Length: 305
Image (tube, rainbow, N blue to C red):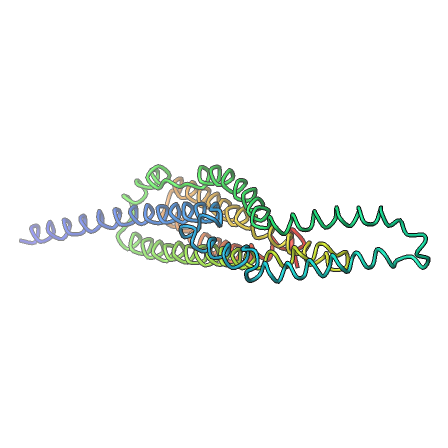
């Protein structure tokens, strides 16, 4: 009877052991699948042109409100541009004390050319801003392919060497190891939330930049207020290339994941295998913070105020 009960207990323990091993391997696969999904999502959103976001509805709204001649922002920008062009002509005519020294024809030609350029810029605001984002998105999409290739993780392949260690471990060791992995799994949703918030916030910021584009660009016709337009263009370039910084942070974290996974796969004990779990969780938190700071870093790089 005792032998029979011992056999049942051993059978139960063996089944429990197999379930724990299977749960651990499944958890690793889940972590890596979740990370890969976050990478795919970040590449898709960061590499998307504002004109294609949400089916193009926000872009069409911006076109209607800001870029339609005689409507909204464009009307205000036209008034600002007209004021600055008139002021520039007056200043050109009265800058000499002796009016006889003024080259009227030369000054007039210069003013006409300058006015033509300023009006052309204002009339093609949507094209100019769209071209800036097209350049940024092209760079991001090219980088995104390489980042996806380098950051993609495959749990089945990486952790193949861990299976024998799990098979030789005691049940209590497997339970503790599984608990640590479950804590690590919390990092993927946190990282995903940060990526979602930052990428969504970036798109909203882009739309706000686009909405008022005619006004700061209208100031470029005047030398004294030209810095407003210059700073605006710097801000546009900064937000356009912010997506590249987001992908760079994800690529770095993916590299850390791979190095950690390689170390875990070669571990000779669960203690050695679990040694890096907490540090990896810390790296994930740091990466989330770094993604949150990409906007400020990008503006600092382009000296946008």
